[in-house]
Image (cartoon, rainbow, N blue to C red; front, top):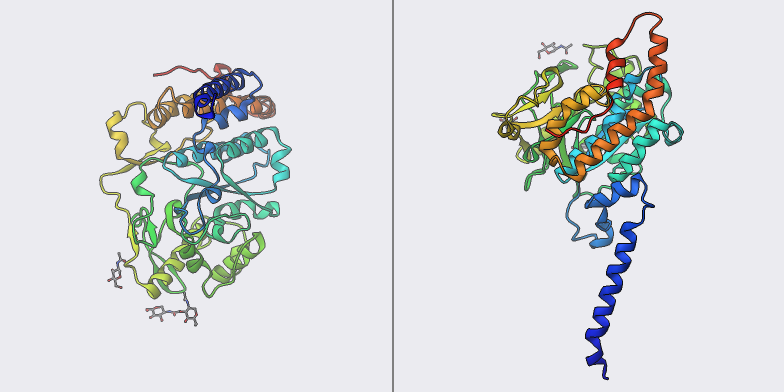
Length: 393
Ligand SMILES: *[C@@H]1O[C@H](CO)[C@@H](O)[C@H](O)[C@H]1NC(C)=O
Ligand SMILES: *[C@@H]1O[C@H](CO)[C@@H](O)[C@H](O)[C@H]1NC(C)=O
Ligand SMILES: *[C@@H]1O[C@H](CO)[C@@H](O)[C@H](O)[C@H]1NC(C)=O
């Protein structure tokens, strides 16, 4: 037989062989939690952006940056922000963004703590870019509030000039894509730009642009932050930079109401104003909030809000202690709306939250035992005993 005649036979055998091999792979029960999580994510099956495209033609990558300090173990509440990180990364993934997570502390601390290494592995499953910023304990909370505008300078940030970076918070889930994406021919995207009153610095008035979301291309971020200023790319140089703007106050403790409160927001607002004075504001896009609002933990009403009104929410300011079952139950309607009740994303979040609770349960009981000397935190104990239910509404 000639090769031409044998070809169909070869193809059929090859297909059969592949099907068998794939079946074998899928039926193996050797998958651990992480490979399952990775397998579930379509994003993870893509090639690395750089492998797929030449440098020139690669479409811009959209990055969202948010951060967390390292929980100090003094109180289970300090896990609040850290717990949110993978969930918030998934919320950004839903809109087509890749997360950059700034962690004030060291990788070693996170790898050696069972709850933190659990968070870390789930961040990695989301392909988040994790950047650790080493810092002495007393400066950590300040740095976790001020590091974001320096992201483009940090070693480990992979963004190129034409990529786009938007700042955000670890306890904000973005919902309305149109609020956050870059606009054609625009250098800067300001979200909620009319939210706040102007502030005064050095006898000059500046508009206040909230850090919750400021977007710009990477090259514009570099221009805004670095032109004519020292380049800050680690804990010490960031504090030096802030010292240049705020004086000695920058290294002191944070006091509500002082100019150092919301230091990054004031500093970034000043830099953006200077940038607009130099380059004009034609390439600055201000997203309108008219007709839209936020789901806020202060009035958490996702269970009673009609689903059609979810489209009028730009983001959700997530409840604290979300890993506690009662809080988690209250978040579920939002999660189901975002991802679908039967989606891999919802399953991934459920598995993550219950796994996390198991990691911190003993630790929390110990905390409660110690706290019981003074008071009886009955509510939280009751909460723990109910465990996670998997009901679907
Ligand atoms: C602050 O600005 C006001 C009005 O522009 C001016 O009269 C005043 O002298 C300024 N004060 C200082 C300390 O520069
Ligand atoms: C930086 O300084 C140079 C020289 O003074 C000036 O021409 C330029 O406009 C400044 N750039 C910015 C962004 O302020
Ligand atoms: C943009 O710049 C122009 C000219 O400087 C100014 O009149 C206008 O108020 C600015 N727009 C905003 C929204 O700041």
